[in-house]
Length: 134
Image (cartoon, rainbow, N blue to C red; front, side, top):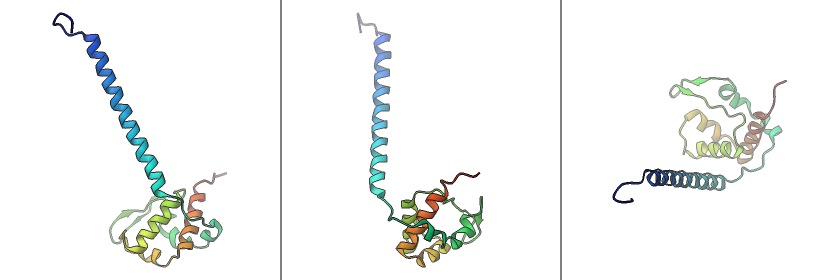
């Protein structure tokens, strides 16, 4: 303030600085969150996509049909798993198997899978999404 009157240029500049600082702070927080999530997720066990391809019959009945919805235990949009990160697929299957995820059909399927089966299915579905149609 000069002579008791506010200086609009200084106020505008301060507002810009405050906004820039807020955006920079949010960006730093977002980056830290993403990095921590990447380290927390870890790497999926190495799987064999060829062996996974031999086990997909039980998955394709729901996950292989675009836009498919289940009717049991409730109407549910079935997620696309082709191209999904293998660590996510393995973690999800483990959570169904140990009861942390509650969908009864998925829980029964996951209960029948070994850790190697889960890794192989994850490797298969991760590489399926990378194929390019001719």
